[in-house]
Image (cartoon, rainbow over all chains, first blue to last red):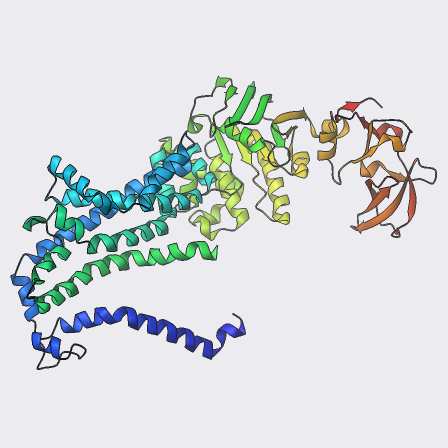
Length: 279
Length: 333
C-alpha cells in the first residue's frame, strides 16, 4: 500500500464520510425501532429519545399480535418473495444461458426483447394484469403475486446474468460436453456456481421491492388469507386515526426477515459487485 | 487404419467462411500438428473434429466411422484445452473420474485408470487437491490426465502450452512427446508456434485463412515448402524474401533464403548494410538492409564481432535458394 493511502488523516476522513452516511441511512430505522417500544404519548412528545421506564410500552406489538393474523401475513410475504426470487433466478439464468451460449437465428433480437421489460414499468399494465388474473381465477391467490413479480424481475435478471455467463470460459463448457455431461448438468453444475455472485446481486435487487410492494397485493390479493405484511400493516393507518404504535411495531418486525435474507445473499453480493473490478 | 479422415469439410459462421474444403487423413499413432497464424481456422477445425462445432458440409470419420452427428462424448476423443478447463468444484481425482462416471464404468476400473494416469503424469501427490490449489503446469497435467483416463482413440490438444511460461513449456512439450511414445495414440495438436510444430509433429498441416497450405513431415516442409507462406512460417528466424532482381536484373520472381544459409563472402552477390546485431551467445543474428531497403536476417553460429553500419557482401550455396512467383507459389530455381 502506498503512503498516501496509509495517511491517518485520509483514513479518518474516509471513515468520517462512511460513518456519516451509515448514520443517515440507519437513522429512520433507528427511530422506527425505538418508537415501536414507546407509548403513544411518548412517540409524539419526544420522538427521538430512547424508551425509558416511564415511556416503555409493548402496546404496539400487542395490538399487532391481536389484530389481524400477522404471522399469516409474514408467511404470505415470505412465500411470495422466496418463490418469486426462485423463479426469477431459475428462469432468468436459464434464459441467460441460452442467449449467451447458443447461436441461433434471432438471438440478439430475443435478448433485446427480453431486456425491454427493464424500461417499461410493469404497473402500466396493472389493469390488463387484473383482467387476466380475474379471467384465470387467480385473483386473491399468492400465485397472482408470484407470477407478476417473476415477470417483472426477469428482464433485469436475464440482462445481468447473460452478461456474466458470457464470461464463463467456453473451454470449461466444452470440456463438460466432451466428458459427456448433459447441457442441464453443464448449466447447473459448472455455470451456475461460477455466476453465483451475479445471481445474489439479482436476488437482492429483486427481493427488497417485492417485499415492500403495496401496489400489487392491494389490487390482486387483498383478501384476508393472502395479505402480505406491507398490506397488513395498512390496517393501522386510517384516514383519520392512525395507530402509530402498531404501525411502527409492524414495520420493525417486517425488517427482520428481509434482513435475514439479505445476510444470506450479501456475502455473495459483495463478491458480485467487486468481481469485475479486481480481475 | 486411418484414425481420422476429413472429407471436404467446410465451416461457415454466418457469411464468413472459416474452413475451406479441408480433406485430410491421419494414420493411427501419428502425431499431427495443425499450425498457422491466429485466425487461420485451426482451432475451429479441431472443434469440428471434436464435435463441438458442426461442419457446414463435408464428412468427419473417426476410426472409420462417420461421426458428423455423433455428440462429442461418444466420439472416442479426449481433449486438452488451452485454459486447462478443469472443473473448479472437483478435486484432481474427481476431475479425472467424471467422464468415466458418466460412462458408468465400474469403480474398480475408474480407480485403476486414475492410478495409471497419475503415475504417468506424476500427479499422485495432488489427487485430493482442488484445481485452484495447483500451479499452471500441474493443472495442465491434470487436464492431460483427464483426457488419458478415457483411453480415447484420438487425443486433441488445443494450444495446451500457450498459458505456460517458457521453461515449463519446454518441459511439458517433452512430456507430451514422451506420452505419445508411451501411449502410441493418435494425437492432433493445434498451435500457432512453429517451434512446437517442428519439434512434436510426425506430420504438420499448415493452415492459412481456412485453407490447407501444405501437409508433410517437418523436414519436408522445411526443405521443400510449396509456397512462400509455408517457407516464411516455418523456421526461426524466418526465411528472408527479396526481389530476385537484386541478383539478376529483370528477374521478377521472389527470392528466398534461410538466415542460416547465408554466409559472409567477399565476392557474394548480395550487398547489405548492418542495422542491428543480436548476440545470443550460441549464435549471432545480424539484421541487415539490402540496397533496396528490404531487411535481411543473417544467422551466424558462434560469436562474431560485427559493427553497426558495416557494409557486407553475402553469399549462399546455390542449392539453398528458393524462388517464388508473384502469387507466392514456389517455382524452379
